[in-house]
Image (cartoon, rainbow, N blue to C red; front, side, top):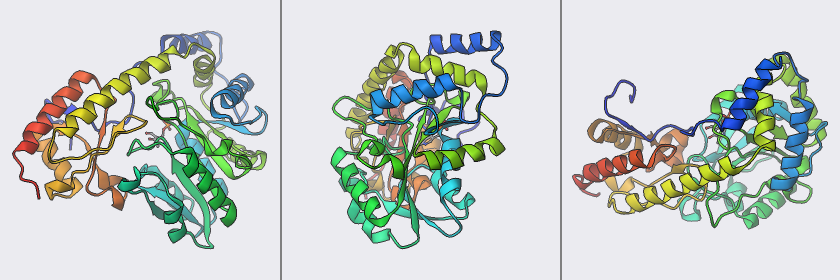
Length: 368
Ligand SMILES: Cc1ncc(COP(=O)(O)O)c(C=O)c1O
């Protein structure tokens, strides 16, 4: 609907508005000049797997060796896909977050599995609770997909939640697929923890990371999966038949991203933090909405149920009347209903203008 609408403020897009850092771009250009245009090993360039292994120890407290426990993939998307395909058999049930990223259910269906939503409740700050897992687990449950920092809610898991979830999955003998592409986008006061860093959890968890959001390089299509040797072996076998290996230039760029200065990541985070504060403050003044403060990623997920409109109607009207594009919460699952997703991967000026338009538009509505 947004396509072709003039003078629209875009808050619907889920990708960084920053340029890929200069030193990463230079490394990609140099790689082309140096002839890095051939296949690499299926699992990825050794120097990249080594850089990833060091990063995992340093930042995620995950102890995974470069040979056998790491697979470089075409974005986190391919890692998710290979993870699901290599663990889920026909009719296996997979617990997916609701609201959650749209591709999880699709990937499970592609593997002939059955997606089973687990509610993430607003009153729990959209954090996954074992009580809710207990209500949906069955003997057929094979995998639990988790995503923190979360798209679309901006929630970040607490360490104590992760410990409880780890005990739960161990008790039920379930594997975890932990999708962590926003690991570096965590605002001051919160901390990201990888569930695979907890004792005994590497063996039962496939953790998926990405360069897309941390280094604003979505189009380079590069990420990686980390897990126990046997799982990575199966995924690497599939890699051969899907893409053989990830684009070699992107792999060289990723080495530069990990080994180079990290000030670019810190600077982007500072700017996202500033934007998050402007969004939350602006939304707090709009009577039709209430919004929890996102702790990570670059999304706000305000509750719009006071308007009396379902989220699709609300978003459609906002687009037509206020010329602001957002995403209906129901697109992320049934429990997303009554919410909209705003992305603050856009300039402060755009955000201020969107807030002004939304506030003017909502002022004309009467609350339910
Ligand atoms: C939660 C989540 N997972 C995975 C992806 C895919 O990212 P990429 O394949 O670029 O790493 C996205 C992209 O928006 C996302 O939000």
